[in-house]
Image (tube, rainbow, N blue to C red; front, side):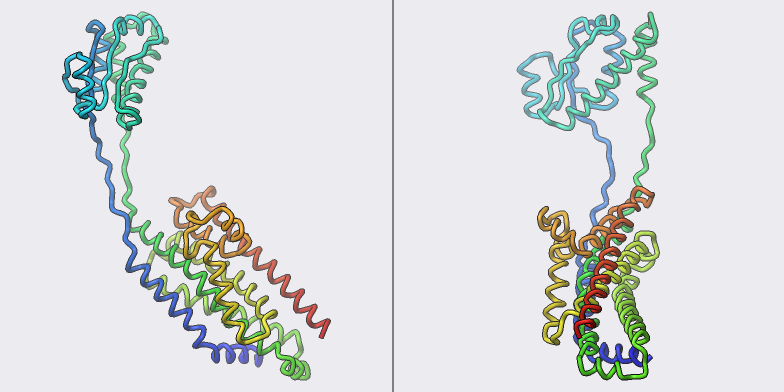
Length: 388
């Protein structure tokens, strides 16, 4: 395993440069964790609006039932049937909704005619929409019974409507603020991981490849008793081992900061996604390592490539805030799909087939980038050998 050992000796000599990116990432991760403020807990509280109910029809069981139903869901305010006073009440928000029952309303409804109530409300208000829904619900239920039960009395009609509309469904709000807070923080953590991990792999792999691609060293290695395929195998193992060690180092802090959350479905998916991205980043780093010939160019390439892809892919600026053109360009990089998968994981409420499909699709795209770049790298290496 001489080549394998030599691989890590070169890594060890460049360790100080690599550790800069590890430290930068850890500082960013800690700052993110300490500065993040989780959203405030919100609870639903039912509220009633003030409405005025004006009846210009004769008193009937149906209008009384409608008034009683509206009174259960709103505060009935007594205001005289005077246009000026009603307008003033609406203007000063003494009431937010005025419903007027027109003449012959009950008789027309019982005859099956299309009846309408006169409504005056604050323009484009949610309270007005809510009251319209309540009134439509009451009238539609009344029309349904009248249509299907002949000769139904007003008493029975009101009784049936009241029974139907009194049905309620219990709704329980699950408080998952703490879980969602950790999900959002961990997604930011793994988003920033793309920058440092990419830079570390480029620096490490390029440093090794420049050494092993040196012409004099290549000729000496070819004269050694070690066969070329074993040298290549050890080089591959060295690259994979370095990538896995870098990945383990980068994700280790997440277990310290987010604890048991990392063993949940979301946490495990984030870890899996980062591992797939590591393979793609390793493949790209290997290609760059076989192209770059100068030691001075390594840092420049690492910064330009890692920073450039991260800026346009949503690491430093959320994808939702980036322009369509930028995102289109970013879609030709594995970082874009990696961040997209992270965002989908963090936003998912449950993990059924519908939610998992886009996540795994994004991971497959990242993996496809790695395979495609590796194929290009092998072609480059073969062309270089043939021209040597």
